[in-house]
Length: 594
Image (tube, rainbow, N blue to C red; front, top):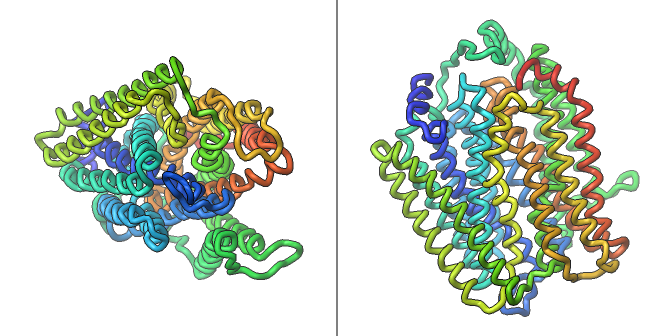
């Protein structure tokens, strides 16, 4: 395995292995399809039935209940997918399986019937379970013994995530809002297929990295002062063997999982179809609340019982991961408003009509926002071609064809926009701002994390949460003039743009480095499964985002839209300061890991 890792590091692109950029582009196409489809969901479900581009005209609360459940399940299935890859398929085969299933899901949604719509969502959930934890696990395996480069690698990889999200939301959103919803859903599936094919054809580049798991377990020598000694590594292996999952553990897992899934399915069913799977009350709480609270308590009991069985250093580090996981829940409960209430705000409350010189200025800016990132990513593609064409030429050809398709669509969109006299900005366009800011700011943050001024994990989390809250503070200020209960308004788009900028800076402080710290802190043989557990925290945040976002109408009618955004201002800022205050405690729990 070490030989394969050394071979990967021989062919470098921008200081990192060429294999990282194969994963970069695979993730880019997967995120293209994922975000390209997801930005359309809330718009499609809430669009009027009687219109030039008819949707399903659901109430906002119903649409966000379904989207919250869908998004939550997307982060739960990786727990199973990570386990299957760890024990059976290996990471690379799991990624190919996931891409294939997701391609079928997008194709199903493009048919735009009720049955195929729900089937498509189900296939996307299953496919993501195979894909999401395992592509990040390949990176973790690639950087064994090179821990100092890991933060930078994950940040570069995160650029691929957001490059795909950027072009997916822009192009799928453009086709869906201007031509038809099925065009947007269908385009997402086409590029998902390209992503799967180019990754499959690049398999020779990785050797045994990410291959089927071996029954032999390696004990690696330490590569730097932050890694454990061979004795501690051996002690970890013994510790894991002496502490297998017991019957009690499996009962807790089963009951909490059933309770959580019951809640996730019951919430949209009760609201949309008036079908209540949990028709009882207890102590003033409805059955749905009782079930989810019980499930969370049982999971907490499981976590405490498991952590207490490990040796002190491993136990402390897993406790640190659990604390960061709690902060992650708060972060994503607010951050994921971007694809829910903030998208509705862009459509219904933002002035998107431009005329005269302002329309032309926007068209020029939009053209630069569109073409400059694509030129940068195409340049990275060229560098990858130079380094790997002799080894994975067919993969590079498929990747090149996909980029030709992207360029054609981008040029067509720009020609259409420039041919119009004025300009109405698509509601989905604002979603690309997060990705654009990440593409432009990620290199700076990557260098920061690799410098001597690299903040501790708790400080990064604190900064990320505070920046997120300040972004919502701008929206709270911008909406102060909107009357109570108003369904539409014409707020300047500058407030939404500034909010996305601050949210992006917060995300760069927290999300990519969270994955990196997880890979450093958990026992090596549990990495795939623990990535899945990490996504459980995000899943809770996703469902909370849908539930809280669905309250936009209720809070706006009882108070104001400004109060709605003020809630998302105060909570993240408060949790961010708690993270900063806990910095000394978390440093001790991490035992030297930076």
